[in-house]
Image (cartoon, rainbow, N blue to C red; front, side, top):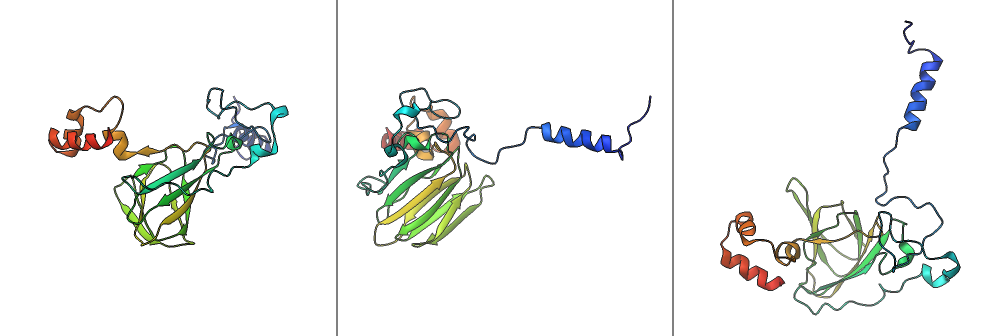
Length: 222
């Protein structure tokens, strides 16, 4: 049986063909769209790549515009912050496009809950105010910096992070995501306000405290 000559042109063509046939990893967060646009039909069931498309005959110019981030959010709450989401559920024109934006208003001393975005990296720009922005890596390293208007930050996908207003005036941030539905896992709310509730035995062992402390925290997130 003759051996294959790895120097031969036929062998090189074979290798090139195999490489081209192998599936290449996608660098985008959401699957790439296969059409110009797919305005979400929010009455349909959400699937892997988003909502089903609205009939093209029913699409209007308004489907490509969204003013939901123009209004200041109400920060009169326990955390002094408000997040207005511009994902596909709020702006159906984003369906399948792999992008979205949020508006974040934070009162002086206010904070966004430590949270993660399981399906997206976040890039933000401070429009107004002074913010302490921080994130924690999977190795437990804490990175943080004080930011002012015009400065940007980036939070890699899935990392716990927060923003805190350290100034004397309200802060405003616009954040962009490479997903039309980035999701948000709020650490404190998920642990202490889940439905049904996490067993106290789990939380007391995880935080090395007794039941009374867990019950007290749970009462804040009920």
